[in-house]
Image 1: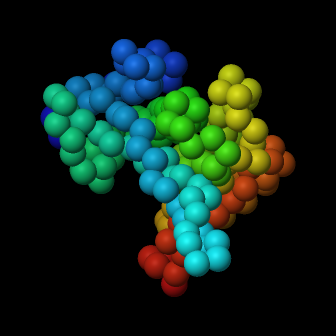
Image 2: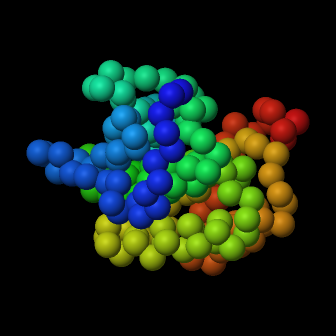
Length: 179
């Protein structure tokens, strides 16, 4: 990817609102949009939506691209900024998509930030803004992505989120590093 890293560090300055009220993020030449994948559970003989997982749809010049291609091209120095922006977009758009009452899953890659102080600050920023979005921490599930991680940092992050009322899940358990 030929783009230069985006040096803005204030996530709020990189989030905008479109004409219908949906938030999107700007990172260089990319526009980042929230998408919500439904999660169903059996209820009798039917399936009932119980949650959504916040995912990002990156677009370059209005053309969608594979999220893995986008995230693989983000320089290491900007990964925490981009991941934070993605979480803030999911939280900010949740009320606008008509899924109120459903649990919101969001991904957390433990390798994005292996510095304990910065990692905790990022989680505290997110939980501090939940009230701005009229969301309760118990509505959220942090889905820790399947990565090898610094156990000390990861354990501290999990304790912090659980203390704040955020639930924890492991993404794709039984694959990759968890095997």
